[in-house]
Figure 1: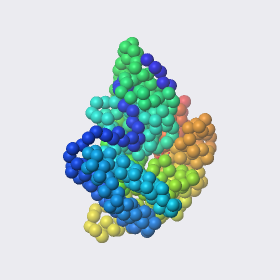
Figure 2: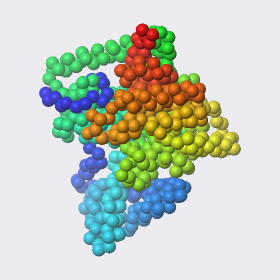
Figure 3: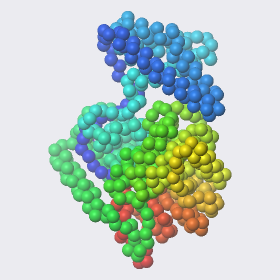
Figure 4: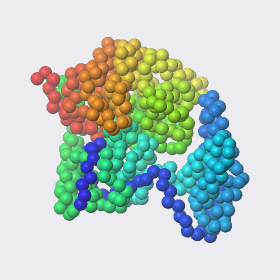
Length: 541
Ligand code: PEP
Ligand code: MG
């Protein structure tokens, strides 16, 4: 038995088999394939799919007046139609009797090498495009981008690291726990992973691919992994797992009970979700509503921008299943660590301070309107609230409301029903705290995002693990800004909730209750433990 120390990201314990995920590693079969026609057909179908995707991206770029971006996609289509490239791949398939994947791998690389040997530096750069396209055609052939999937038996997912979009593509039904060699506490990838409700351990430095296929115990509570545990340890962990289950079951007695302190101060407990399928866990844990639905998930899981219809169906599912409980959907907060290649966002030196969240939405209004229209259509089915992320100025919020009104008018002209809804602002920058009175005057509610508020108040990159010592969400400057926001909100009759990770930090619950916070929004699994904590508090004592 080997013990690999790491850091706890999400509590709990499981025993299972490790499956090690390695990003974009294609194991290509080099054996002989007799049915060349079938392989060529597969290759052509994959080419067509990638081309269709490129055309759609070009159209989207055009619609957003991004003619440079559109040109890039059109030039990719031209490369994919190049007869020389296609013939090269087909020759490998037919003459060497290989599979389509082999033909693509070798054929695309040959062409990239040829281009690289040309004297013109502009043309030379096209070899990178060819290699990027090779990856996309391979993904299409091998389904690699569709999900992280290791079959139907439950498994512990191990990886060097996972991006937010990879976590969004995890096969949730079969993954029992997550173990990462790298990872960081405050990234969106970690927040999404925590939301899965399974044990997670990160920064397991000694973890390697050699663990693939081996039995292991993941102790998420204490932050370590035991590889190839002995029988006695397995027996001990069977007991731990039984106790954990008994504790979870004991919390069920709090379902239907009020979230109120001993001296009668009530607070609403909401849940944070990132996937429509999380609603059942929210209801099981008896949250008063959804305090933060991070809609980003929809935008991260596929290679394409989700259509209005796809978004509408997701939002409607959540709003309808939660009805009459309220649902706060946050407009998309992508950019920064949530990269979406199809948007072709330029590389930035400081992405957390760059083109992200509301800045993308207000810059690409067509894209923003698709999301708002989908939300408004869903509003008919329940109790919807819309919140806008990373607002730093009043004009931004006013412009969001204008676009929303424009969408509502459009829908009404189309005779499409729109329900009632409320609008709010995420308070996650010191600027928004300082102007919280003005924002509250315009909004129905404020929601404090403590993760970004900490990052921007302390000027510390929330993703940089070497700064963990300095990233202190308990810093008095952060806590004081929460108080200022609550007071400003209340001066204007606005409800104020906290939805960042700090909302579930039991050591601060009493502080927040004393500040008079109206709602706390946490992972669904934290709702009942938090209710228990609040019911034990006596603010008058
Ligand atoms: C926050 O910043 O606290 C927040 C809730 O948003 P996210 O973690 O998605 O950035
Ligand atoms: Mg945030």
